[in-house]
Image (cartoon, rainbow, N blue to C red; front, side):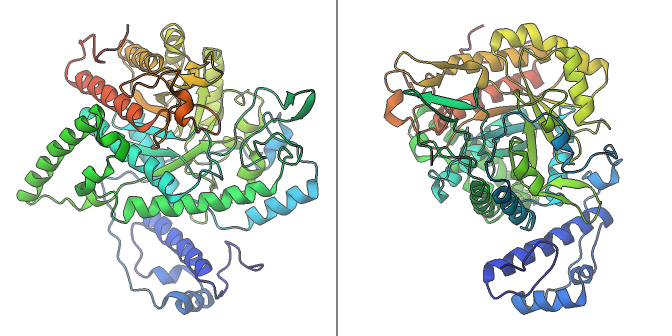
Length: 542
């Protein structure tokens, strides 16, 4: 164990290490395939000694031929983005770092980050480039981005059932959106890394006692004691290990048969299936199945429908963790943050002189930035040029979180500024964060009607401006929770305490999220067929 790292293949007797080694080999094969089009002998890309060690674990690998699809864009053929020569994975340390914990023992911190730096990557450069290619299509209106998942992942809530429920919900929503929009839906989970959360104050006070704020399980614990609230660097290692398990499950679900479209009825969550939205989903499934039967009857290839591309994303907040997992790709010499396929910079850390903008500008992952009504057009243009200096399509997603009224009054000037500079971005709506409030009984919640109104405003503005509403970003869960009020699920302020399980902010439950998916699909369907229609969301307030 002490000798193993991601740069060398060293013989181990533990099967998990053998699997990790083979994953690294697979990553090399995938990247050479994407760059050169084929590999005649996949074993030729590693040394003879390394080959013997892999054979010892897995036996000989058969020779494989790869034939590239000429219709698929390949990121490596695009003009490579040239980051500033002064950028390094640690150049962010010269900038202003907000929302980051202070660790009392620097030696302990270094020990943890060294362990992370010597660990295998969680995601691979080839996977990241695949996401970039798909987002490039969304930037011109030829795909739709669906991002969703927990507000903050927790160690205590982690289990296979929870991961599967969130994956199922995203599959359900994607099916609805694809059918309604006639567009491919890019599926991105707020998973396998969404542990850290920004706080409004660095400390919290109770009964005259002041302790560090709870910043998510990757930093400290929620219990209000000095021991629990200590900023503990070892929690980064625990978060890494849980993320590895989550990604292992997601890869199995997305390619191992569960995502086969013939099982679309099985994606219906148990607690949703008996509701009105569950019935609508079943009716949609019947239509899809009829279409699949027709395709099979005429001899069409339905093999691609047996698996899906599924990606992960989280907020780029804890830069010690992100730097430790940043790697230089062996096929392109580009830097990638291998903690996740996509990362975004939050509203509180997107200052022009921030450490977070400095870090993200040098990595080649797709990036997002959250903006509120506080963002000026000039500021947004500077952010775009900083995070995407070569203006590569698919690299930058602007995540709008403002509240319905502010979207109508503020978003048009931001769109005009971006269009005037001919900047390539994906515009998506985060309709939940700008609509958080506290109830009389002390619970943070979000109102479904307010979320729906912000989504409608987002689509209205883009229709008026002639630009593309490229996606949606939601805090949601496949679990049967009562955290957001309203919608057909009929959660009220009085019923919030029944299943209020969130580790941080309130999430839409599966029924509420699926209802939103149907509303968006209806809007997109009418948008593509009848752009002059004025009331595209059924029952939505003006």
